[in-house]
Length: 85
Image (tube, rainbow, N blue to C red):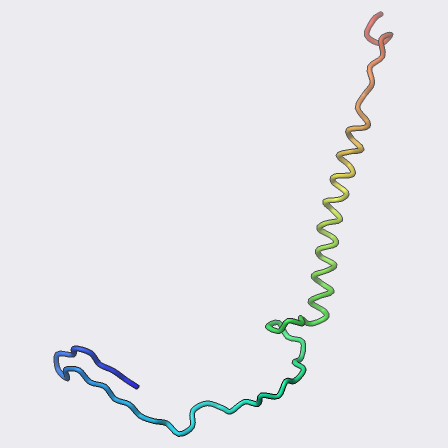
């Protein structure tokens, strides 16, 4: 369907053509889809890479928090005989 509204030369036009067959018919049968980026099951190499990268990033966070707690425990202890001669 095509419609041309308020044209100065042609006025209001409307054309309709019925096409007998547009598009490609598809099946209603449910099939297993291959692993693809757009599917709900990504390729295995991508899934493994993602998990490894996330483990590396979160591992760095754990190491940083561990080092911060370790630094807190290593505060210098002042003794009385070192400050009084």
